[in-house]
Length: 152
Image 1: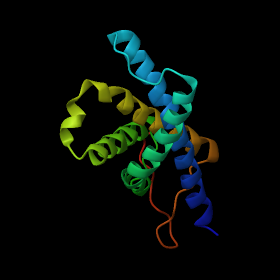
Image 2: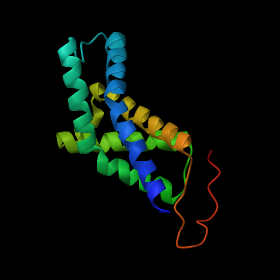
Image 3: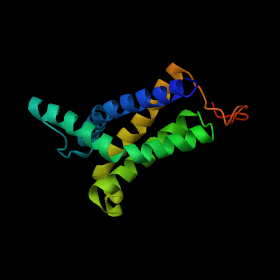
């Protein structure tokens, strides 16, 4: 039971961050479109639903392993600073884009920036969720896991 609460908290916060990623990407694309004058993103209501649905599925498919890898490192090192979580979201997004396209060259494309911004936003959503549920750390064996790093 001692391990159940932290595991459920991580899973719930990850699911919330996955659900937040498509709207964050959409907002970032519209901002980039307004600034750069390029027409990217869905334009009709039906396209919007498909964008949100496929965005959630693609995020859950391609970003799960890198995101849980980043979460594991953050939990192991007890990193709780919001900036670390934002960087973890960016890392998961970049790995997911690379896996989706099969080429690291996609990361140099300017049109990828809204998705990277959405990854940063998803990391922030995960951090906010974890703060709301509390920072229950897994202990190493029966003793204390050691002092937390001073990044709050």
